[in-house]
Length: 84
Ligand SMILES: [Fe+2]
Image (spheres, helix red, strand yellow):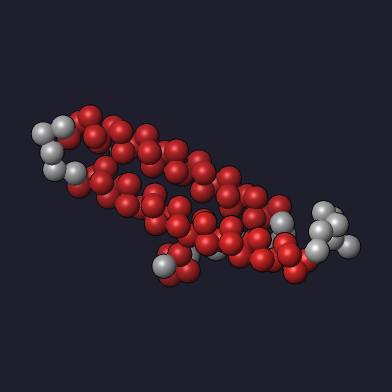
């Protein structure tokens, strides 16, 4: 029995979209890390710290999204090839 008593077909559609959101966030996170590391600017230290705040926030959201997918009894994607 489905512990949430939800329509499995509808749950799978939602979970698929959530996995797409997870993939987008993972790519966003990686781009923020790239900006954090490779930024060239006179404001390097200010922007370096700001990008760290952004990727830290993105990382928390990634974990929330993945764990919500798990609550639907669907496996969150986790391979870079799947994100792409
Ligand atoms: Fe750093």
